[in-house]
Length: 221
Image (cartoon, rainbow, N blue to C red):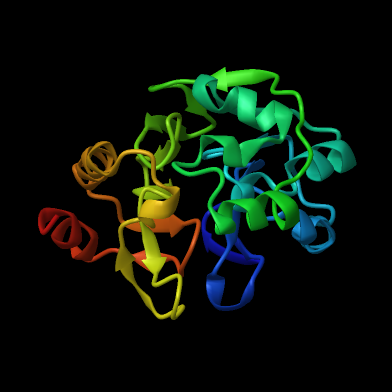
């Protein structure tokens, strides 16, 4: 667990930052896959943790949500559109093709149990110093979170900072196989680029200290 900004910690759960979660101001953003639960709980240890938040309810973000919430006795928050998936655990149902082989494998090996959502989030809501940004496209109710005072952005999967096949670092759009609407997701990318974030925290890939690279990537879409 590495501090990347004041009160913000990067917690990689898989090699080469292929699946990440973040602890920021006592909020745990995402929870990896279900087999990550012991590692995640151990890494969190005795840290100050009061709420678990999902950027979106896909199997590689929701997998350990219920285990973490139960272990630390904390609530689960997400968008209204993701609530049903987070609560049922049937998260692959919202994939473009739930019957694809990869979707079926994720449902079996990555998805975790559902957990009650105690609060839903919308555009402009505040989580400490973070503002909720609605960024649909990859999933219907995807959320990102922006801290204006230092430009830190928790991206989720609106973009990745790695090639998910080779694991080489670099900015990419999320895979089409898991993205409901590519053009809507591109509009969300433009919305995030307009914020001119300084530190970007991705669900997949290393943290990016931004020198304009993100804006140039988005401009080429």
